[in-house]
Image 1 (cartoon, rainbow, N blue to C red):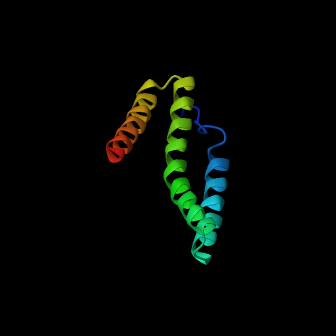
Image 2 (image 1 turned 90 degrees about the vertical axis):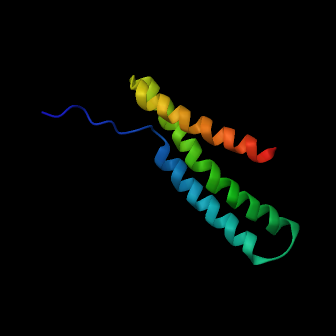
Amino acid sequence: MSGPIDRGAPGVGLLLRVGVVAAFVSAVVGMVGDSTVNHVAAACAVGVVIAVPLLRVVMLAGHWARVGDRRYAATAAALVAVAVCGALIALI
């Protein structure tokens, strides 16, 4: 007999779909011209590509903490902490 299957954090699929559409639309708008709007759209595309996986890990960490799987929650939190430290070092 197998145990219950964990379906994962609710909303992760929606986050990924919205992130893909937002990144695609922003990237297309960013490539079309050479105005300030295009540069901002390109920066938004890069930001979405960076932020969505981190948000997914944060959502999964919260889900695992609620379910009681502390090892996975701690691992996810450590991964986000490493990414945040890397971003802070890059800003220096």
